[in-house]
Amino acid sequence: MPLDVLPDLTNVRALANKAVAYRDALDRQIEENKKKVKDLENEEELLNLVSNLIRQLIDSEVTDGVKAVEKLQSEGLQEIFYDQSLSVRAEVEESRGKVSVSLFTTEARSDGSIVEGQSDESFGGSVTTMQSILMRITVIFRRDMRPLLLLDETLVAVADQYVDRAAKFLSTLSRRLGLDVLLISHDDALVGAAHRAYHVDKINDRAMFQELTPPTK
Image (cartoon, rainbow, N blue to C red; front, side, top):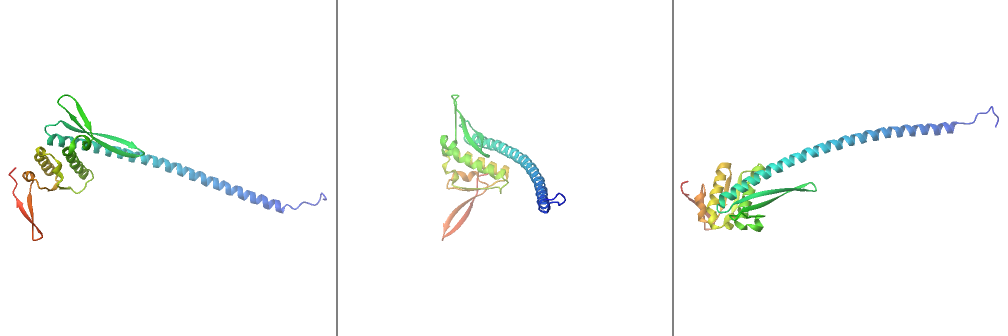
C-alpha cells in the first residue's frame, strides 16, 4: 500500500466508540450498584437496630409479665390453700427467636423438703384449676381485654375444703380489680361469696331466674 494512502479507520473508530460507550455504561452501572449496596447496608443496619429494640421491648414485656404472673399466682395459692406453703416460679427460655415461659409450682414442706413441678403433674386438680383461673385473669389485664371472666362449673375440681376460700378470693379480686365474674355452679357454698346470685329453673322450656340474697358481708 502506498505510504501516502491512509487506511480506512471508520470501522476501528466505530468499535472504539462502542467500547467507550460500554465502558461508560459499566461505570454508571458500577456506581448504581455501589449506591444500592450502600443503601442495603444502611437498611440492614436500621433493621438490626429495630430488631434489637423490639427484642428489648419483648424482653421487658416478658419480664414484667412473668413477675406479675408469679406474684398473682403465689398470692392466690397461698390465700386459698392455707394449709400448704405454695409458690410459683417461672422460667423464661428463648429458642429460634421464640420466647416460652414455663411455670413451676413449689411446696415447702414442714420437714424442710421442697417439692417442685408443673402443677398439672404434681399438685392435683385443685391447684391446677386455680392456677388456670389466675392465669386467665392475668392475661385479661395484661392484654387490656374486657374485664369479664366466665366460669362454667370451673371450680368443680377444687376440693371441698378450699371451695369457700377460692370463691372469696375471686370475689375480692373482682371487687379490687373491677373484674366481672360470671360463675355457673351447682355448689351452694359458692352463693355466699357472690355479690349477686340467681337460681335458674327450666319451666315450660323457658329459663326462669330467681334472685338469691347472699349473706351480708
